[in-house]
Image (cartoon, rainbow, N blue to C red):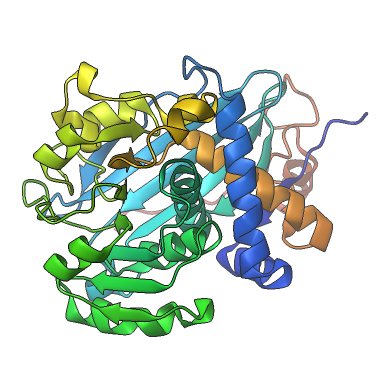
Length: 366
């Protein structure tokens, strides 16, 4: 079999076209099922997915640039470069989260695919919450509370609507524009959505998703004093040391399941907990469903920091659908030299050499 030499490029427009062709619900369903399957079969020790690394960015140091690798030996590696810039929507008209997905062949190092990561990240994060909710929340949960009504709230609610029979959605955001525009942005779901103050939202919700851009040291974003005994929380927004959304007493009284223990202890809700206060990871719980079922009538928290296995699965889904629907562009980025021992021996370089004068004219200093 010939070794592939082309790279599949999937732009943001290509990915939106794929979602439209497949349908939003079917696309989300596929992501939920593929993620759950990948979690169940993930290496118990978490090998293959190291914690992400990065640095703060921006003049006010409120942004983050991170790289997130996942490796399947003998098959492929996926690396996501992702930036978090909370001022983007207001100052620059850009999404808060931007990124790029890279797929590398494990045998040759060939760059198999490059894809925009904004929409895949939002969908896979929502899908992960759906996996956790289906496992840990009471099956009859009908009222969902959303704290934070930005872009991620849309895919959080979409994903939850695929695993719950939702009858009411309560939304709160400190930004009135986000809060008021959310019902229109989520209108494709056909769910009753209304604004609510935090006290009402917390008292009524069976499931709460927190997806805020609260600043380091400014949390939590929940009060935590009127919560239902069986409440399940998907805590999505904590992604930096010192950035938290859930009150510490709520965490300590709940069963807390992180997606990736190493990441969660460094920058998720688990950063404030001792090891003995942290439960099994979501992949571990999926391999022990009897334990998870016993938690449904008590308070649970899914500490969702978002790890690279999720991005690997998302890119798998994108590549398969792109090939099925003929979406994307294939280019030869890695042409390489005709002679592997001669870096100047490409055909293009040879042609260019013939078109150039033998000696370039000297450039005079002014």
